[in-house]
Length: 163
Image 1 (spheres, rainbow, N blue to C red):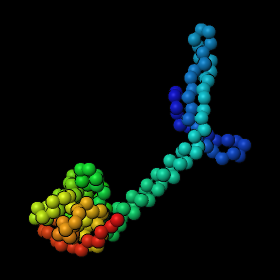
Image 2: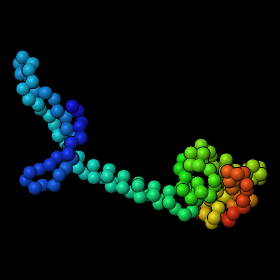
Image 3: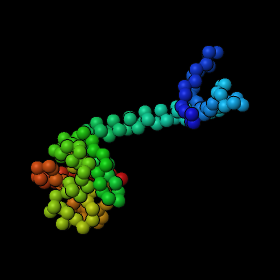
Image 4: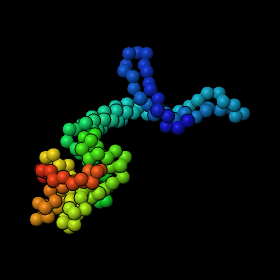
C-alpha cells in the first residue's frame, strides 16, 4: 500500500490529524508475513488547506450562479462559454447545456457581428453590466448592448463597461 490517506486519532487527547502512509509486509527468512513496516507523513495542514479552498470555491461558484445579473465565464482565446449563471439562462432563453456549447459571438446578432470587426464582448450581459470588453474605439459604441436570445430576437440593452 503506497501513499494511502488515513485519519489519525490519538487516545491522549491530541486533535485528530491526517497522514499519508506507505506500508509493506514484513517477511521472515522463509517469506512468511510476520508483520508490517511503513512510513507515515503528517499532511494535516495540506488537507485543511484543500478543504478551505474547496469551501471558497463553492462560495464563489454560488455567488456566480445565483447572481441576479446574467453572467458568463469564457475562454479568452476561443471565446467558448465555459460557465453561465442561472440568471443568464433565464435572460437568454437557452438551457445551460446549449449556452455551454456556444461562443460569446454566437450570442451576438448577425447584424451586430457585421458592424463590429472585433469580437464584441462588452454588449454581452445587458441589464447594466458587461463581462469584459475587447472591442476598441468607435466599434465599442456600435456594439454595446446588443445580444441575441434563443428566439433570435435582438435587443439593444444598456451595457456598462467593467474594468
